[in-house]
Length: 417
Image 1 (tube, one colour):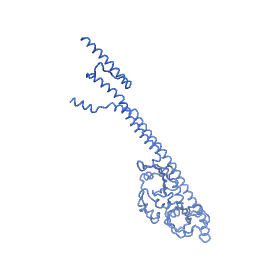
Image 2 (tube, helix red, strand yellow; image 1 turned 60 degrees about the horizontal axis):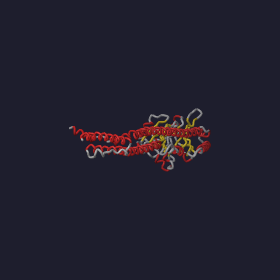
Image 3 (cartoon, one colour; image 1 turned 135 degrees about the horizontal axis):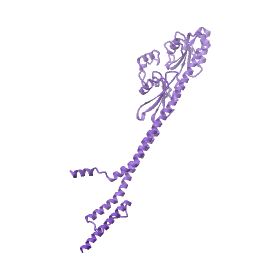
Image 4 (cartoon, helix red, strand yellow; image 1 turned 90 degrees about the horizontal axis):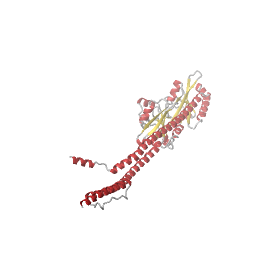
């Protein structure tokens, strides 16, 4: 039983070179690894915070630009609603006032390249006078941009909708034409293409780092503009109008009644889900919010900012690796250093062990030979010129021991003679 225990102890005995290697690792490699892990993690956190700050600043800046654009265009149509020629036409429609109103509407439409048409809609919901004469007679009473001003007397900005005239996505601004007593006489509306809005959104492609992309959402979570249309305007209509979540049935019914997507019904829209963004936007009434999606190397960080002119949200997102690349490179470098440290520790441990153990084993061999009588005591000698200081000291001690043994051995032989 005792013999079996000794065999077990010998089997699991830690060798000297393993102890040396462990010491080198503990003293040299482990501290480097720990410091690298802590510093890299801190660097990664700092870079992520810096990246989110940059995204936030850019997102709020672009959202402000979109707000300014919408407000300016709304101010334009409000100004049109107050033009004397337009008010006279809405009060008394005759050939003279009609021609004057058309000229005023044409001048308003010439204000900017994105204006497609400016028109007066009578209280029956039909376009009565327009900067483009062929628009006249079109029934738009189902459009919210007519319903809101005509019933509430408030100006209105529509969501991008397919025009019933051009069958292309457009943005509509409208305002009531009022009499002196405040009664609504008619509604003026402007139809603008989305070039300007798309341009603002597209400008943020790769703006805050490689892979940065942006999109504009309406209050139903439907994409109105995406940065991917940059240099791909021909495919724009296939890239926008993708909801981030399924549309509620009552909302779908409302959008279908407004012919928001032309002949396409809301249930036919392709959903590109972003549940984390949906959860972040639902409680957001103003300001901005941060969100993340994806995992691992594909993780992205984004900031969504609410507009004030419309309940839309402007979203800017960037792959997290864009900002943490320096930390990722540092991780690789640190791992390389640790690997090299392990290799060097192993090599140094083996060489150090051999340089120390081999001379000692030679001394042990000589001592064993002397003890068994294989070597004459008079001729026995321990080598003291090789090895390090400790080995030479041990060899010298053995030599002194041999001298003592010779003294007593030869003294005994002399006494016997």
